[in-house]
Image (cartoon, rainbow, N blue to C red; front, side, top):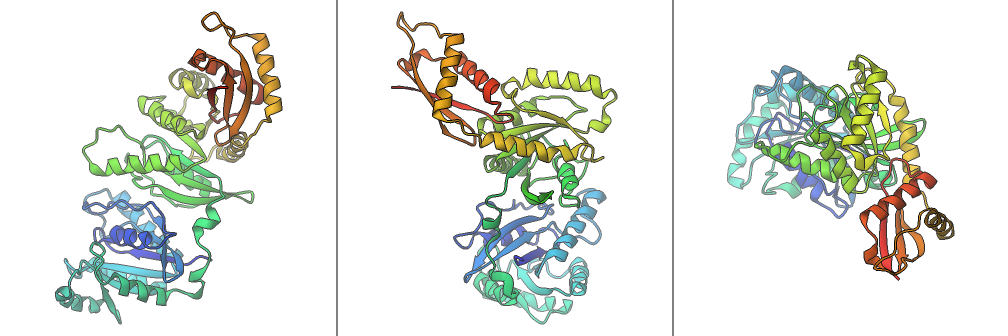
Length: 448
């Protein structure tokens, strides 16, 4: 079992900054990091990363802020779920880093959390952040009141005393801390990005599929700001699900939204297939078109999920209406299948995994050059292309040059003669013959 270190503490003590510094160290450290922001409580979900120090590799989880009396700037619902997330991380962790604020000093919330941590029976490091010079280390004396045998001063921003902190952390790790990195284990798993505009039910869907509360769920749009990875097992097969921040329009005054969109784009980029979640009750809107366009542009396979189907009054009529609306507004992805579901009521969610498997198989499909050339000859005999500047347009041969997505090259005598409508004709013929369900096709033309 891979060793897990959880960073906990009240909001805005620097947990995300410390998390980022930890996972950036070492060649195998992950490239993505948690959002940091001066607004208290910005990290709401658990965010996992991988750290390496002195040849020891371990996982780190950055948790949402803990506030005993609730987050003052948000709803009680969000505050309670953030607290629950921190408790889940504590349960999972082998070692806990309780991060405290050396600038603000000890607070009642710190003392309450420290009492909870001691009851967990886990190994705890008491770390005082925002101590960036030796002259400020006298601030740490009051923190011994929480019952710690040792407190460690550090500055997550400047790196002051970071090496000493990491050495003490490594000494606290159990022997299995040197286990193979998680990144190697999950590298071959199918990667599924769950994307869509805010508040369409992405986190609820993943929580349903996982069978446990993994992500903060709320009716407040934009609750998920970071992308969170979760491993899901379905009949013995594992999938890596990426829950992404809702993609909004670019014009946002709140700086966090910009980071969230960037994270969502990166999540799409590293996925194999994107589940595009759409709020069935609201229909197909402009932002749904934008999300689909990003997925298509990145060459990712896809599945349209019409969520919140439990709210539909006439399912048969609404399905016909919405699928037609989908084909009209997102016409460039007519190859993508549509599934209706309710993440909240867990309706038809079991159909998602077989469909993912089917689409991923299509994404990896390879057609031999010999078979493709028979196909090409048959297509051209049924509908020959017009001459180019009075000269015959010749197709010499066609070959598949790649998968994920399936990519083809056609060799002709006049490259300039091939227009967009010709490529769309070939794509339609390829799909009629070989399906490629749920996955885009790339066709390139070269002169021989």
